[in-house]
Length: 58
Image 1 (cartoon, one colour):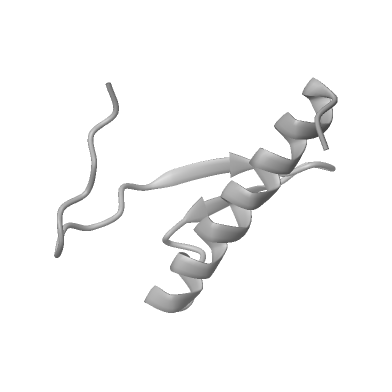
Image 2 (image 1 turned 90 degrees about the vertical axis):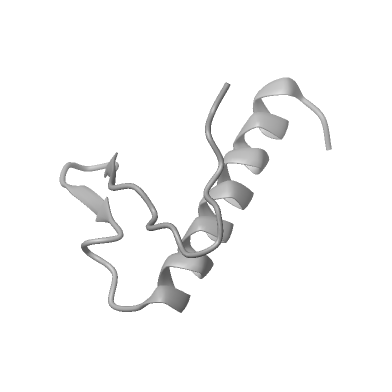
């Protein structure tokens, strides 16, 4: 089971492979803490949309 972060803990480093080559290292490649929060929310939304599309659910 995945571990959850507790308040004050640092976000672990995450390397994402990008379409077309290259990669994004989070949080190192992001400029500030709010950027990280917004990027994670956008990533989760994108993943949920992709799963919904793959499963054929609206």
